[in-house]
Length: 483
Ligand code: ADP
Image 1 (cartoon, rainbow, N blue to C red):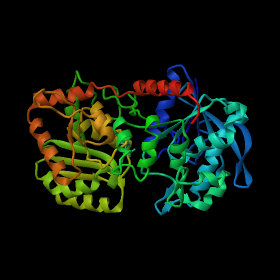
Image 2 (image 1 turned 135 degrees about the vertical axis):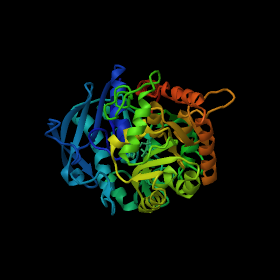
Image 3 (image 1 turned 30 degrees about the vertical axis):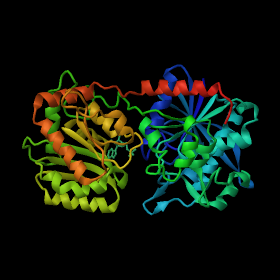
Image 4 (image 1 turned 90 degrees about the vertical axis):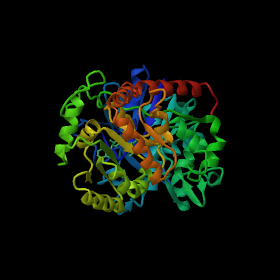
């Protein structure tokens, strides 16, 4: 099959979140199954044309509103089996950030991503790509399936092409005022509640949801949750209507990047069958953050400091958590209020708590490898990568039972002696504290704890499995008629 993967970010080129990790790992994993995979993304300032030796392959015009804009296409590679085309248009993408600064989103984001979405399909014509599948991701590419349905579907290059649209986080929808419709070049008859209108605004995520042949999201549980008012962010009705075409495929993690047996970012190497190095990692982590080595259980967190990640219940629960005799290290950045609350709590718990308000992948790995437990009390979690990395490094996850966390962490069952972590249901500070208390009780039994650690380390969350699921879905949709 020929797959064109359209994304607004991909590691290692440009990253703001989990989408970049997926877009940097999934295409090579699908290509390894023997398919022809091409990625298309904007050329941001972060993408270094010279270091990556990108070559200009063509220049073309993209219709936008009533006029046309010119762009270049640069060609690069991802791994050794995926071609990447970068849409090079400096006025849109040569900026300090991808979507906005701390002062807010860029005011022309509608124009930037309407242009990008349309350029994806124009590129197919210009380079004669003829993909079997265009796989789109999140609101930034939500218009691609709609364009294919309305404007490009009869073109020779795209006559048989089907679309897959993946929702990585329903919380970000690409909502813009209705007059931006004029930039799309689409008829006003798509601006209806059945189409891309959403309470008077244009909703680009909804464009993907109503027009893609197949919708996927990044875990089975999240695919069910988003059909309910609690998690649907107002789009639950649309998702319920498309439930027959909605699938959940859990993300993977890169097993080469995250491998405690070969990782040189951590001070000692270890595996499920040779665990001894992990104690050295804990010792080193405590030294790194200047906490005393008292033999207390050590809880780690690596996260964006935002509501979604459970920071409100965590900050409420902190006095109770710290009274349980644990040490806590939090690495992250995000909302100012949580920076302040966590810094205050750390200064009250000088011997037991550290907060590091930064983004640091090396330090993150030291936390995954040095911690006994890893905390993710998320309000909602489409998939979550942190808990999978923690499992791989033998930091036992303590997580809320939601989205991908439910699908990847197995709650410890004392009677059966089985499980890979600890889950709690209710989104509340007391439920979180109870769950930690339970984990600590089990932690005091070393043999039991090691069994849990090893069970987690032996799980397989590599991309290979998920890539096969996507390939199966592509095959299925290719046989169908278009939506
Ligand atoms: P989300 O994409 O919603 O932020 P995920 O759990 O899916 O959450 O992915 C977060 C990824 O980013 C993980 O790999 C995590 O280790 C990493 N990460 C988050 N915050 C930091 C940080 N401050 N420093 C280093 N890595 C971080």
